[in-house]
Length: 150
Image (cartoon, rainbow, N blue to C red; front, side, top):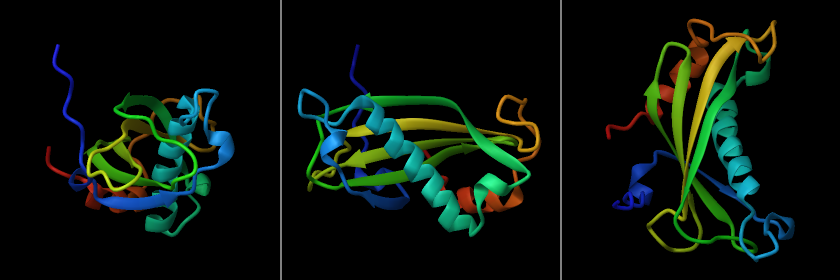
């Protein structure tokens, strides 16, 4: 089995930097696995807030996480900041597939890459509802510029 190629900074479109905290590291001295997922969530939702200019939690349809995953390539952790690159692989009728690369230090290769899928549901019925069609236009307009050919 061949290991997948490590993504590079050129694979991502939008960027955000996160400050690491002492508590982010686990007993082994590297970033706790749960923290990777917090960073993915922050990268996606902070981008949506800034790009749409609205409170995405108050829209008639909201994005709920339907799938996540992470490929780990090397250890990262406190005290250096983490740069988070964001790109969209697919915009569907009611879903968006994001990839988030985590970078620490000068390396051009990602230390980790996450996959994050939002599915849009009716905000008045709660997150347990079925996907709705279509997602809000303001969200679609914000994520289409993040699409990158693979």
